[in-house]
Image (cartoon, rainbow, N blue to C red):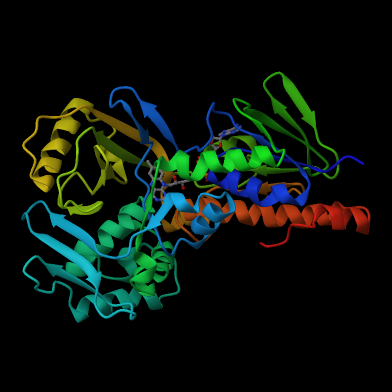
Length: 436
Ligand SMILES: Cc1cc2nc3c(=O)[nH]c(=O)nc-3n(C[C@H](O)[C@H](O)[C@H](O)COP(=O)(O)OP(=O)(O)OC[C@H]3O[C@@H](n4cnc5c(N)ncnc54)[C@H](O)[C@@H]3O)c2cc1C
């Protein structure tokens, strides 16, 4: 008897997580990816101008990202992720030139101290009382309706952290997403907030090992294979249309749609999806970091928001960067390099550089857009949704994308179980499954 087929559309992290989770079930998994390479918005490539491999964007992960660590274990790439021993973050305010440090105050309690170079504390109990308003609220409204969006703790810590994670001006962002994020990170204490550094680039750590594993598990991986349309029959997906090819689905076949939101909306217009997106801009410089520069520095009162130091490369991230889309890249890069020079103390001329703008990097994390995120089950019995834009309760992040992929795999296993005709087939099919 032929095995049920699971068609996964999209080989970003969500689609890969679903594939890796489902491969041991014995179902025939087919991964269809429109691009020539996997990874979607989380990938690396060789840049000829910098003459090195770079990531499409700097990706910050923390030790509390349990799904990311579990996924790395599943694909045998845990050694590519290093959890730093300290949850200590360097900040610099470029308006005043003052540097500060965020460090745990009284571990293991979730109390943090934002202090200046001279050791003076910057955060007050009033700041923490303000933060508690958010922690205790139940609603999903713009953050500024729930708590004061000012003060040392907000300006120096919450704003940069929330802006990076939500890719949306924090004052307008969803208080539910901000609350969830803070509960998982700074309110969990220092251990949870240790940064995770990726060795060998995003593709080397999170994408290529997954593809290698899937190949050994006989998963069919079809690159440059773009889904053009879903054909429906009797409230099911009856066929998948690719360029010059239509694949008919049998009753026990299913589809996991793991494309970005805008593509899912075009393929399945009956699904409500986020409709507003924000850009992220990364500026990469082929320049060595000076001794003593932290791997990650948060920058306030500047165009630069985060500076990442890698071997032979300095790299800047700017979130919610829609306002920079019309800027001339030459002017912009000069401005960013001047800021980097001030942070690092470098006097060097502008080195070889690359600006990467991801126009639709993530959905805009406002309460209105957050409400538009659909659940995994998409109103058709053999169609499931995955992607960082689905209703994971998390922002559009690596953790969110992986959570959605595992959730889709869980629903897929339940579907396959329902279709499974005999107990013996069922035993065979699910021998390794059911850890979701
Ligand atoms: C610049 C940048 C910086 C970021 N920084 C961080 C960070 O610091 N920390 C963090 O945790 N997250 C960060 N993120 C977010 C993170 O990268 C995403 O949340 C995650 O990669 C999304 O994965 P996904 O699988 O949901 O979607 P995608 O990665 O978009 O994958 C969807 C896949 O579907 C494919 N596809 C599209 N249409 C079709 C079709 N018709 N047929 C077949 N395939 C199709 C696409 O080619 C793509 O490969 C950042 C994102 C960007 C862009």
